[in-house]
Each structure stands twice: as structure tokens, then as C-alpha cells.
Length: 85
Image (cartoon, rainbow, N blue to C red; front, side, top):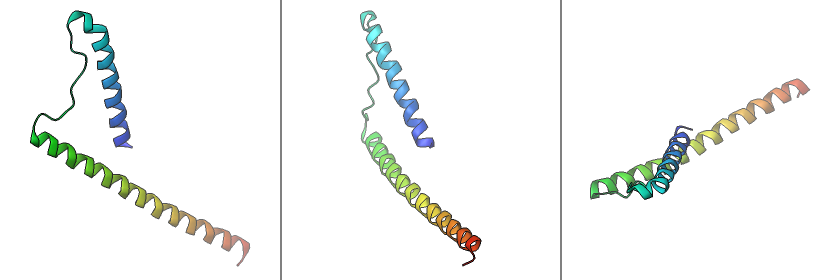
């Protein structure tokens, strides 16, 4: 959830900067930010963060599956107790 909000905030900022660049092009302003890494350290950091993001998505998926499994088991148990089996 936090990751999605960070992405949406970054997307809004890029759109704002893009609009400002398009509007400010007549005034000699920059057309936007260059988000390409400037150094090897920046590239390595970005790649590491992207791998971490992928791993967190996988962990989130696994946790959701466990929770759904537990919830389903509890629901089945309640239904079985209510029907008297």
C-alpha cells in the first residue's frame, strides 16, 4: 500500500513537472527531471531497490494467500459447527 502511494505521488510529481516544463518551455525552463542514474552507485542502488520491491510484492502475495487460507479454514469450521457435522 505504501509502495503504491509512493508511486502515485511520484507519478503526480512527474506530471506536474512535465506540465510546468511544457508551459515554461517558452521561458527557458527545463522540460522535466532526468531520473536516469548519474553514477554507478545510483544505478546499483536503483537495481537493488527494484529487486527489493519485487521481493516485497512476492512476500505480500504469500502473506495474502496464508491469510485467505486461514480465513477459509475458519469459515469452513464455523459452517461445519453450525450444521452439526
